[in-house]
Length: 312
Image (cartoon, rainbow, N blue to C red; front, side, top):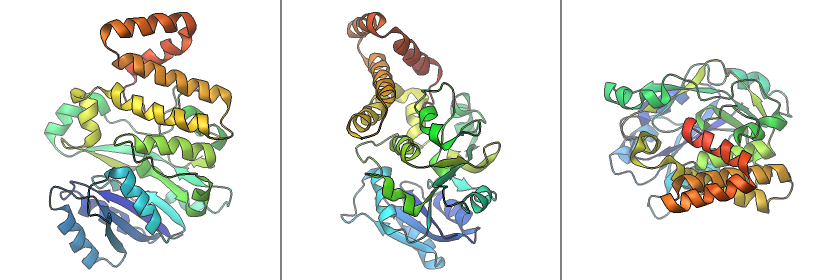
């Protein structure tokens, strides 16, 4: 196996060395592609030193040296990969020693397009633990049971009830399988672009369950995470999820082969989050309308908003 690991780097000078070295422990890691995204800290200088130290590291920036977000950075990384398999890692996360144990076996089957496992949580400070433990606890980000590849995307959009999720840190894709995708990461989404592409990957590709009962990578939780700032209540999480489901709705409507029940479910999920961010009077009007026309979907959507704040 020749695995290319793509790491978008933004404001991660404290963590990027750990991320890189966690990937270098595997002989299958053929190259590590760092995309430095105009960090406000000294991350670029740290990346330059790492590139000088390790031959496997390739360092890039966007052509205008500007900040374009994690999605655009991962897209640039995908343009640069030369390995046979693609894995992802956030700059403040790291791989565990069992990261590719399942992949070594499963990818022997040419019908396997991708393998996913479980992602755990690492709190980088007591302050981060105190602030975010009520949200993330010590749970795993994973699909909670082995699932047929044909059904994975249905679970990810909550059409099959409680299912879990796939984190990019724990996903490995066969490079040739990416040709089935009409586009890569949606760059208009500053948050949840990873969740959006994982749904589409699961629709087009045959993704198999790897190690899902224990973590194969750890997600670093600290005060400066982009996503934790949303989930901690500083931003209404429903607002960012409206954008996510809006993009999924556009994809479902325009992509040939998406079943009608899937299109309808995605539209319903979008409506429920739109209700969540609507101002008071308008909100009750929207709820009244959908109670009459679409009661079950609204009930499901409100359940997800109120009790499952970690929906991808």
